[in-house]
Length: 162
Image 1 (cartoon, rainbow, N blue to C red):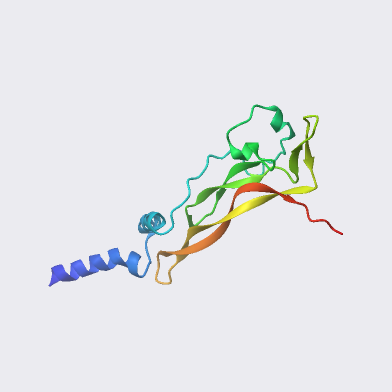
Image 2: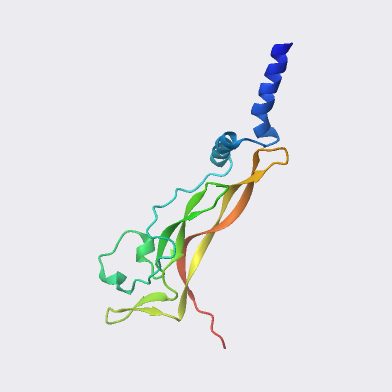
């Protein structure tokens, strides 16, 4: 009888993270990894190309040999920066940051200007993160949350104020 009681208590704690979804920190990390793999596949994060807040519109970009990277060849160039979300799984991700307010235009003489007739705007994608929430009985559970993440930048016609 004692063995059955011990087994029931053991299974109760092992299953509690899955059924009632309340887990300790270790179980929570394992559950998050498993759930992200099975239910919410994550995109491959791109290596950051700048520190957060580091923005400079690269007008001399087109004088350099062309790179194969889209973020550098675009008329609305962007950098990738690492963002952090405490109490979320994954806790960090890479996001695009537009470098110019306008868009880069190559003139007939080969010079490059930033045109305010167009605006650089982020292209966003919905992404699921798992947020760590406290249980009333102690421990934590995972709640899926959707966040809009910038994945690149594009050039759009400016809205005229007429």
